Amino acid sequence: MSRVVTRDPDRLVLFTDAVVAIAVTLLILPLVDVVPEVVGEHGRSTEVITGHQAQVWSFLLSFAVILRLWFVHHQVFQHIRGYTRALMMWNAGWLLAIVILPFSTELVGAYPGDDRFTLMFYIGNILAASTCQSMVSVISYRDREVASESDPPDIEAVRGGLSAAALLAAALAVAAAIPAVSYFVLLLLFLERPVTRFWPLVGL
Image (cartoon, rainbow, N blue to C red; front, side, top):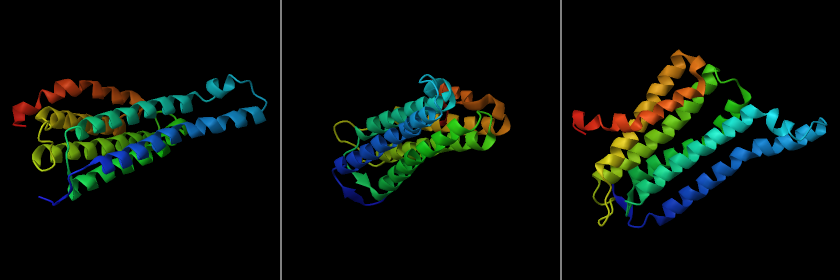
């Protein structure tokens, strides 16, 4: 077990929240740049939206993805009173995935939905974030020095994180084999609850 670095994770949480806020803000910047572009071409104001629907769609998708990831991250840290070097590293991996998402979003807005590389890069990006988040959940559940004494994490949080990662891995495999499914393959995440019920059958 790695040495506990501190008993107060607030500094780590605040830093993480700041990075997430910046990443969310960066998502909108490509759309902001569209306005002078349309004006320079003497286009109508509605063309800012109608002429850039792919970028609008990718922005909304990634906004929802980042908020969902942050919401789960927030829930996990509600049950943490300290952190280890291992937890810090997995959290750093999660942050790296979040920081890359605006770049992934730009690719989604620039290339068609059946572009294999873009599709796999985007889903892989989310999978990386989900995997890192799952590992933080596992560490907080298994390490009693990390877990809150009054409100420790429960096994359901671990199962939920593993289910999301497993479904994203499946989505990545489907996207690689059948790019035509496009980003609709992410609808597999709605199966998280049924998959979570499976884990007790394998002893988790």
